[in-house]
Image (tube, rainbow, N blue to C red; front, side):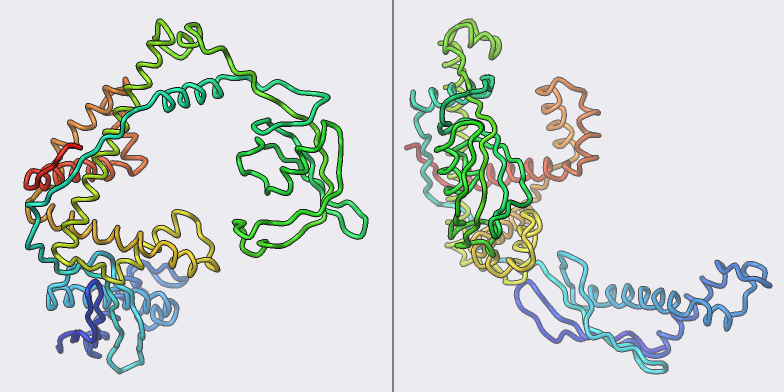
Length: 415
């Protein structure tokens, strides 16, 4: 029996195309195997199970047998291709240009995304600067005010116009030829950008219970591209205004926020949290600077197919509609390219230095996280597994090991 023929027709970093030719004898043998499977499964009137003639089965289940045959031929061809070309795919291949006629070879093309070969000749001897931003009193005050706003109740306001940061309840209807149509209720906080500027401006001029007819214009940067620059005739009714009454900033407030004896103790705790966050941000900047220096020193290129793959993941995560894909890809291509280069560098170090997180390290991290959350490790493990987040935890451990290894080979100066 002739062998399956695989020929590489195109190759570039991150992608390859392979032409596959499956001889008629192999196709026929696969068809016979698929037919036997359906002979065993078939339940047809007048025949005992497993005794249906092959000709009857082929006629009754023609499409199913053809699909099963193709599935087997593709799987076997992919095994041959991977072994022959020593491929390192990062995803299942796509099939194009399928041709299948009775008595003739089956031909098609594999298009496959590959992990590109990467040679990093320099991974160390870089000079990096770690600068931790100082925590200011203004930052602590801002955090305290945010906490006050979270605790503050909303109280109705009557007889006066709303102000920025007030919660408004409005009814907005369209006006066409003097007729008011389709009134819709909305609630939002003024100044948070939930409504277009023209609408907010009209609301600020009303007192509760008042209505106004207006023509409003959608901004040029409005999220819905089709509405940008468009105008609408509306009727706007301000139904209710609520305002927050911020609690006093004193020791009693501090005790309400947790185990703090005084406002000063709360301020100290907030400052410590902000300092830790500043240190994490400083570490993140050092890591980013290190990766960028490695990329520059080794001329790491982001292969186009991998960039397109990352852009697709971004678009899916942000739920970008198809009509906005091209503009989205243009805006985020630089970010995607940086992400691909970073991933290539880190993956190379993981594999070359064998730094992938171990089961023992994963178990230890789960135990630490569970203790912080006051729950059992087994419960947290099950929860993360159900949410498919275990891989994220393992990836975090792996990255920590990678950067510990890389930073040990460079100089980090404290600014």
